[in-house]
Length: 88
Picture (cartoon, rainbow, N blue to C red):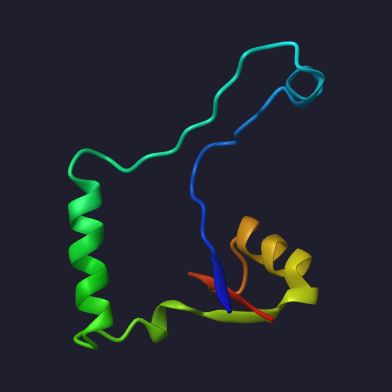
């Protein structure tokens, strides 16, 4: 199994105390931009066909027990990190 870290966004703040206590009716949704699903489907077909080598994009690899180190590296953008892969 392989998972990769790579969330780029602003500093997201979720009001966890109220959220966990049920003090609000909150829904969290994520989505792709308009047309993004089709572009993602085509991109995945190109990658699956072997027409593009994505290995150079994964600059750092960590075992699952090193996940905190991996998140710290990516969050602080050190050591030329582009993409971090986590393996079991």
